[in-house]
Length: 123
Image 1 (cartoon, helix red, strand yellow):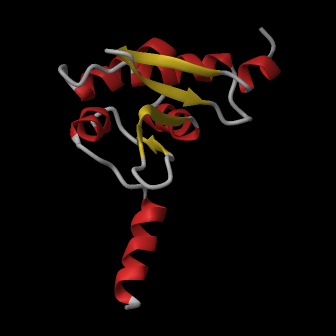
Image 2: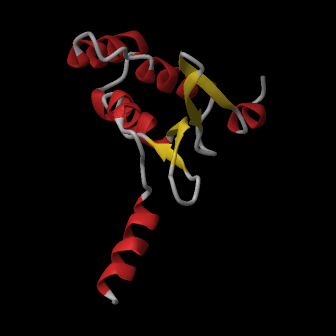
C-alpha cells in the first residue's frame, strides 16, 4: 500500500453493536502512524490506561510525547453519535470519551450549542 493510499484511509477500529469509532489520518501520517493510532484507540476502558500507553511506547520504541503527537494528528470520531441539530459527527479526544458520549441521550456539537446560546442571549 502506498503512502497516498494510506493517507486517504478511514478505518473502523472499535466496533460494538454496530457502533464504531473511525479514524482519519493527517496527510503527513503513514501506515506505521495508522497502526499506532489504531492500537491506542483499541483501549477497552476496563484496563489500566497508563499501562496501555506504556505498552504501546515499548511496542513501537517511542516516547509518550511521540505517541501522543501521532494520536493527536489523527482525527477520531464516532459515526453513530451525531449532533441533534446539524448532524455533525461526534469527535473524541480520549478513549474515555467513547462510553461518555454513547451514554448521552442526545448530543449537540459546539457550533450549534454556541448558536443556541447566542440566540437565547440576543432576545
